[in-house]
Length: 130
Image (cartoon, rainbow, N blue to C red; front, side, top):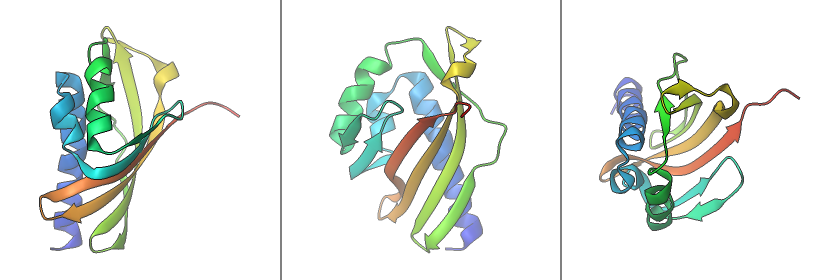
């Protein structure tokens, strides 16, 4: 698979992440991660594995928080043909109103698996002025 094809697939994975979040689909969201994924929330909670990701997001998705589309192109850097570091900007809204206090930078490790690309790690950091 070429880098261009891999980049297209990783961008689809990112789009699916937003789609499943905004649909409140905790099972679909968790399936975007490897079974043993490391997931660190913006407040430092470390979830270990797809099951913990699904369980935690099941409750979170009952809130009014939605992800907004970013107008910034993700940074995708290939470590090997099957592993990439992905950095994206994130914004969200609450009850349809953009919330700048929730702006984040999210770093993923994307891994090519037999099922396609999946996220093996996730780390969300709030963007604040130093």
